[in-house]
Length: 390
Image (cartoon, rainbow, N blue to C red; front, side, top):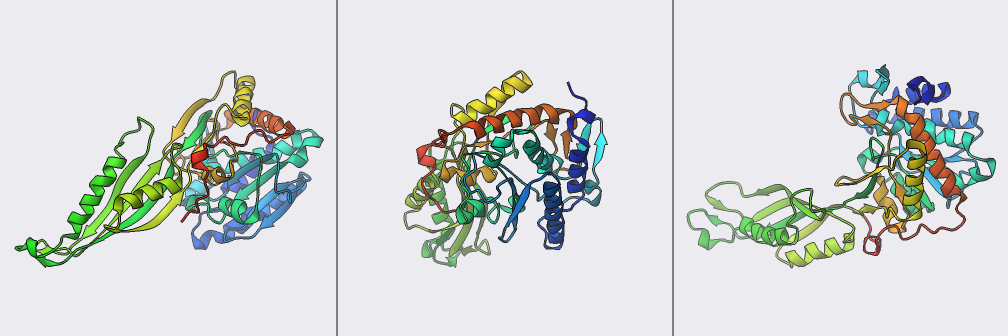
């Protein structure tokens, strides 16, 4: 077992601390910190003999490698360098009992020095097949980051390694897709003492809601399946008045057994003209077939470097992995020992970084060696039909 002092090379630890000190939130006043972060990464990459390419969008991205212009690398190492807001003290990294504590330590700046280190340890003939991508808007949806790289820039990796989940040497093999929508119903106002003279818009809503609930009956974590949540409901202005309008916000999460298009069509068929549906947020699901090459490669690397396979789990949440689904790009999501992301005590276990890095490096090497893109189809057919997010 490595001590934490051995788990990060001195220049890697210095880079990580420098990144953690940058307040790269998505607040407008912190955007200059994004620029400082990019400048730091560009300098570090150059010192390691790597080239950087900037991809412009609302949140400019960095592509790094020996051939950063390559749009179809064998392996994409990707992560976001933006963070959620925190108190000023959270941006000064501290080491406590072998844990590096700071905003962004686990979510997910720890990956940056490890990604750069890969190029130092890969055989020279494989380096052109690997690409790093750093984005800066994951915490606000990833639209101008990962989605832009895939949809607008045309990035098409054969496989992707994204350490934005799978805490504590697990592998996140599925994330539910999301379809959030606003539902509006109309009625006819009347005095509350004579409701028969009006048409209650809330009654119309609840008729639809009951029908939707029949299609989405699951309310717990098991069985793994689609869910429906009524998050907000408004209608009427007084107890003695029949409301002539109602509006609700609803949230559907769906699994690999459905596509975004199918869920949207199902909602519209249930509403069936009784109300107005307005999409608010729509996103693909993510699913990694653990029998695919990528699934097998990461588990073999885990056995070799950790002495065991990664625990497989499924998440109700979402990450930038969802943007790869429609392009059938397999994504491996795993992290070292960590915790507290988005909290006042966010940390990464430094001692766990060395075995984690060796596992990642073995995966990257195996994926870079693969001559054929045999990994296509790791996402279910139903989940990859084209469906533009809203």
